[in-house]
Length: 393
Image 1 (tube, rainbow, N blue to C red):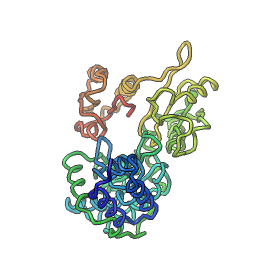
Image 2: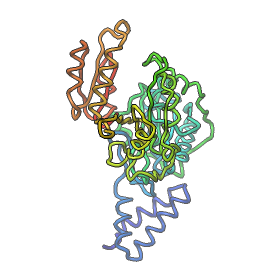
Image 3: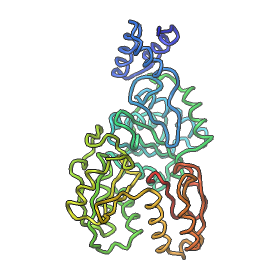
């Protein structure tokens, strides 16, 4: 396989337009190997340069690497410039934008790039100081009346990946035509080295996290419960917040998997950091058995998925997403304040079980099905009190 002049020139243009020395050097090495006749390098360069990341079910995701088809500082800067252009075109120029991140490779510098580009374009940027669960970003969007929220995360993807989740002013992830409009704006964005940046942004006050925990506490009465819980954040960012949330709800006997408690972008104890994957919850269930837990909880790395394990006669079993969704839906509808929610709606996706439909009928609630992804579930209709999908969301 030979290196075409077009591919070579595209790579050189990207290198010139990039502002990150590490990325420039990385791509230069690949180009050099390709020019020397290395077929693998030619194939890799083609993969990096032909195409670009697109908004999928949950935003942009890709391998952290140089080139338009990877997650890197140049791509983040150009994407953020495009988001700013789209917001301005839709009447939101200069508004508040929330910025958050997980603890993956590159997340801190990517989040800083997002904040600095938006600030230079006149937006009122509020950024979380520390890596925190993804759900805090859409929560902060609504709490602070922001025009958008951006979370740097690849959720439960492999360690080499990172991503870019975008929320609109309702706290929902974007859908068509917004995603295609932003992708078109990315193609028109300036070279990354020509995009301005400034440090003029503010950290989000801790009161937002306190408000989030307080809201969680309202779901449960908060009295002390004699329930022993084993928990793993799976090397992600949800451990501390999850323990605090459980305590607010009255659950104080919580045991965290020590080997997986601290954020670690390498996810060293699991082959794939997704609670659905075989073997991912082995350490959790071992701890649950050791401490005599009544319940086991596994979060994914950005803490927007939750898997539940229960004891059986011969060990432990992780519930399927549909089982957990049905149990939570029945509980919430059973305890719902009908004076505040006289016409409640529950929802799930077309690939999930229909158990929730029967549960809704039993409680006199409305039921809806949507396409896959929470960007659709949150738009299921007015009066939505509960939604889930089988993939543990």
